[in-house]
Length: 395
Image 1 (cartoon, rainbow, N blue to C red):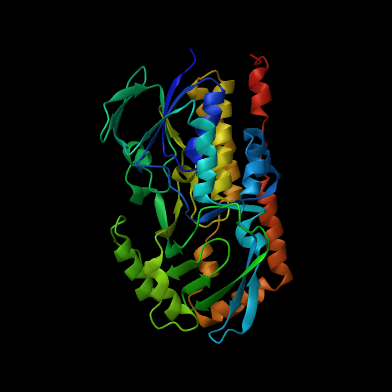
Image 2: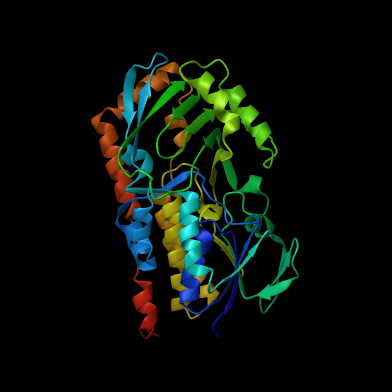
């Protein structure tokens, strides 16, 4: 018997993408989001290669993403006196098309809000699986029962914590933190031309000023920190302390940091799971295979949502069959496309490491590495689910 009612936790990227496909295939979709409203702005995210573009095109949003893309930003790396050392190309840091996360979420939300139920300002507090479904308790709303529950709630996933176990068992800290400050929502006047930003390294620290991504961007090495995730003043102090004494433009940048309403700090971490599903629950996007600043996160989320919904539709709602196929397909893809540590590359811990990284950026070896990354994004047998689902299913 076909499963109909599903609950998705998270309304950023993976959640609305999954909602779009499940609704298209006839499922009854509810999305719950902790934030009181859809989040605007945020860091830039990107897509690269035929696989990503194919899924976006099948969703009918590729053209709008291109219309609302940010400009391509080359980061010219300089010493403390502003002398050029190397260039981190926009194609490397921003893929083929780049868009602010909040703008992408808004595009996907508009495609689903009229048909899917969105519960903002709430979150899941407990999950109890029964023979017929999952009883879901919410922080604020009344308890409800769904056939399936999906965790699309990011690297710090509440659903994963409730079903799989504590975050510390599955999320590996990679030794660095990153901060994005001053990202702006898209406007009709936004430039789509090639832009030059400037970046500077000190041992274990990397900072960029300007560009289309945000007015300020930081990556810095650090022991794992314990700080309140809802206290941006405390987080700003962490960044200011991490870069104290660094020259170049850092005194000006740190002085301006408090002026930006759009501010985000988090660790560079990687999710390591042996399975993405358990019982009637499945994880998609960063909650399942997140790797902060790894270069493929948003693409993996959109492709994962497409595959998960497609396999459920092909299996006529049989989650046991569909989840097994989803895991088989995505484990291979994430192994190829999600294995990197951006912190070590952007913020080498020694002066010698910085010098070697700058040499590598200008070398043929770097161009070969970039080509390998391009190949990894397309290394998946992407089924045409919309066509397959509309046709008779064999067996």
